[in-house]
Image 1 (spheres, rainbow, N blue to C red):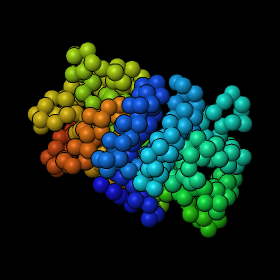
Image 2 (image 1 turned 90 degrees about the horizontal axis):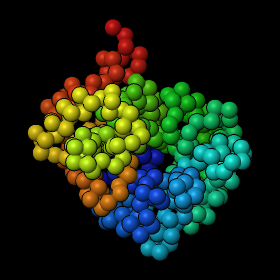
Image 3 (image 1 turned 120 degrees about the horizontal axis):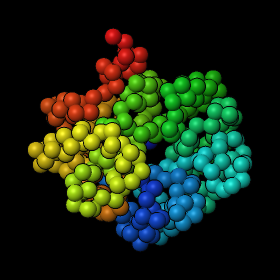
Length: 326
């Protein structure tokens, strides 16, 4: 399953291999096997970041992917996305979105990834101390040098997307091709601003954490079985306290459908208007296969309506401000 990324001609797989687990949770041999299996199943887009692998050292995950690309000759088979902006050391200059750090960060990522170009170079988080003219100055240099093909954002607000695109238009630049945001049945706030803004500006949307860190992957049944991993910690554990009743209802509904909760939650994200693709963070080849099943079995209208009842949208639903105007 391929989809065009926003206004560009770049074709990305609707299921994107997220690599945040590589290094610490997934060792190198298993990570390489996962990448091989994912590529064979049609997941041709790989998403990483310069600081991933911090459990080993910042940059470890890019290094791992670089070794995999070089060993298998896979570079021309994949769309490679990485990010810049997160702290890479204790040096205050070694982070953020200054032109200096964007250019230096790109050069470092290229070395770690063992490639001559990055297909989608994403701003990992907003740095509102840096004007968009400076960000675009750096990106235009990298694009002209052929080191970056397209630029994306991540974890932005609607106003950030508007400022980025309006500044790019004034400079006759390409603008942002995509936004990467947290979006799932539990976190539906992007429907208010992010998705409408992205659609208006011709941007693709790549969703991270479509299972809300495992909360929507059968968290309660895994707790009862004593097999919970990600869903027993962090964001999922915090959200479970607030959404336990809804999660219980969701898992019962999935049992009724005869489908894995993770598959249903991912299928819901892929069904949403404006969503180009979803980033999955597999730890096993079975997780890859479950993700593929979600893409191959879309949800019906009655099933989507039931999920809306279990996890209601914000206000009346839809974009702001209509969602809260009564």
